[in-house]
Length: 443
Image 1 (cartoon, rainbow, N blue to C red):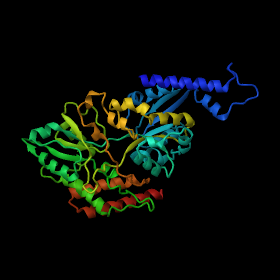
Image 2 (cartoon, rainbow, N blue to C red):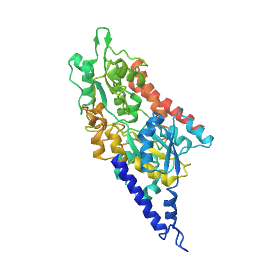
Image 3 (cartoon, rainbow, N blue to C red):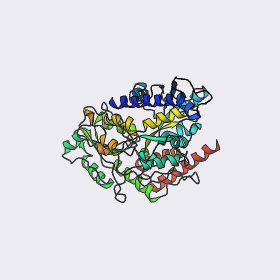
Image 4 (tube, rainbow, N blue to C red):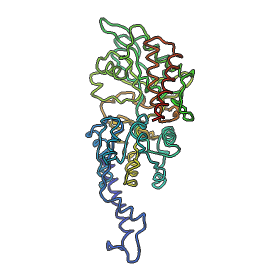
């Protein structure tokens, strides 16, 4: 609260300085002296402005938006009224545009950029505003900045602000039941596999499962930084030793005795239920999900860091930031940028991060080390596992990445459920992906 009061005082002081610069002390413009354009803009920025935020994350209620984003904006910028536009379907942005009510700012994960922004040409380069307001991009995780520049063809469509977490969640009670040591940081995938074997067992009529991971999300954030689609040719090829390695790496966890894999068990939603509701899954790597206190209620849980490949020691997943994109139809660009820059600041994020509302996409060690310290949910938990010490380099970005990603899931299913060899499953997945890309380009 003190932080916001100081910010408001600074804003008031700035307003008084602007007023003094634009007047002769009596509140009137000096005769014969026109206000400079930047002075007119500064005054105009204090006029009431409504900014419509569209939830491209598809995970916010209006109450959550106002609590975490809207109210802090109103305290910092009293002249700005944030309005929330919820996600209902992937084509909603087009509906808003058609109705003449396009949003001013869209916040979305890197994975949904194509579906809710790029698809409708709503992106705009904010590099001139970054330069005008002297926002230091060095405040943001550098790999996330590189990712945004790749997405923006050398510009910057947004400021990466929040970060999707990437810990292994685990149920301590299952490990205690079988007398098995808990997962720990710096495990290799092979270490994780050996640990999974020890807790994949049946106890009475209950089957327990060692480890599961959301495969599609894992491939998007793959540690080898492999491209889903070649940006030079708009084609994909999964005929690569490392694609083979990553697919086989996940498949082996589902082939352990007792798992009896099904298409349903390979879905992220089922894995989530097995861990949070059934409590039969010992370890879950959702890859990009922050579980709530309600979801983990009644569970004796903790976290371990993202597993490593032995040939990539210390390398975690690629970043998966949530960014705030100013839209091409935005009529309040300066005010909007100031708001976005505030959200991408330690001033705004520190109290939120301490409350465990979200991990940060900023490079600040203070923020990284402060996650959850003001909430009982994370007391005694291994919160440093939320974010890796080092991100893998971001893969190339194309508007066809999601088409290719979807086919990788089918490749895993073909390998695990139909017992196709990995090479064949990946080759057929690439053929389907290229056909889908060709059809999309023909539209």
